[in-house]
Length: 229
Image 1: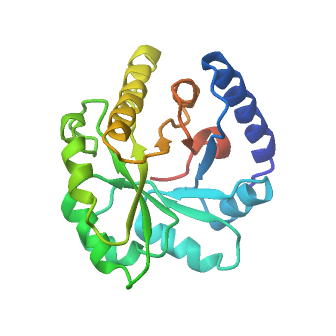
Image 2: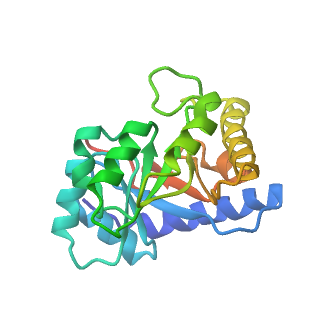
């Protein structure tokens, strides 16, 4: 597979990001997580060669296989897909950030699998779209979950993650992203430090950037259509 178009696509994404940050007056750094699901390890190399240091995978096994195939590549691996509790033991220490923690039993299992003194950075996924098929804690249940996760040894809760509905309606996209930002602000007033907002994908990242995203998860807009999955 040819990734020669990647640098140009990345440059276009950066231009869009800068323009939409300016619209809302944001100036913070927005990290691009290159989503390499269903692409070969060469996609990861292309992302790193173009200057990206963060790579996201949806599936645990696929991610681990790519990590093993690229042991010396300077990249931070993100797990952005749903995580089952029985796979938690495979994830601790292998990912710089797990985006999809949405319940206490999963958080506790991650903590239990950590080596003594080790830490695992995570985000809490929130279902801001209201779609039953999407993962994430319900918005009204987020405060209780954050409080319950405080005592989990070794778990470093860095922020929140969400997905908007699969729609071209920018108002609906904005509603979901603004809800996540408002939930984060409310949680910080309750003494939870949550600097990261992971929101926005290929079809809606411009709106997410306007609403204060600190991380966007991009696959198709950078790599083209996937061949599977």
